[in-house]
Amino acid sequence: MNLFDVDRKGVFSLSFLAAGVTLLLDYLSGPFIHFPVLFLIPVLFASWNGGKTFGMFLAASMPLVRLVFEIFWDKPWGPFEMAVNLLAQTVVLSIVAFLTDKVACQHRELKREVNALQGLLPICSFCKKIRNEKEEWEPIEIYIKSRSDTEFSHGLCPECAHEHYAEYFPSTSD
Image (tube, rainbow, N blue to C red; front, side, top):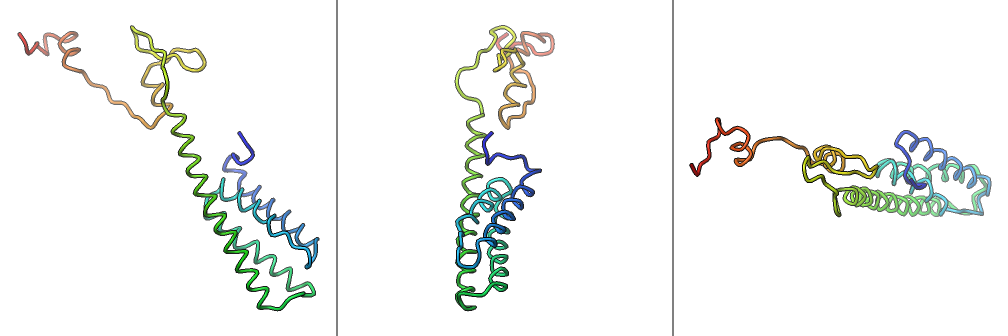
C-alpha cells in the first residue's frame, strides 16, 4: 500500500485536510508570495482516490478561496488580473484532476489484470485442487473465482456422463 492508495472512507477527510492546510499556508504567506503548485497536492490525492468529480470540485473551489483571500488583502493587482489568475488556476487544476483520474483508472485496471490468473498453477492430478500462495490446496473454482471475474456453472461432458451415468447416457458408439 502506498501513499495514494487510501481506503475510500478517509479520502474525503484527508483531501479536505490537505486542501485546508494548503490554503492556510497560502493565506499565511500573504498576497505577494503565491505557491499554486501546492494546490496540486490535494487535487492529485482527491482525484486519485475519490475520482474525477471530487478532484474537479477541489480544483474549482481552492482557487475561489484564494480569490476570497485576495479580496481581503491589499491587492497588488486589479480585478481583471485576479479573474485571469483564477481562471488559469481552475483550468490547470481541472486538467490535472481529469488526467489523474484517467491514470488512476488505468492503474486500477492494470492492477486487476496483473492479479488475474497468470503463470504456472500447481494443480493436483487427481482431485484438480490448486495450491495457492499460502501453500494450501483449494478447489479450482474457488481459486479462479477469487482472482478473476469468472463465474462457474457445472454440467456434464458426454464422456463423463457416459462413464458415471451409463444407464441414463448410453454411448453413441454402441
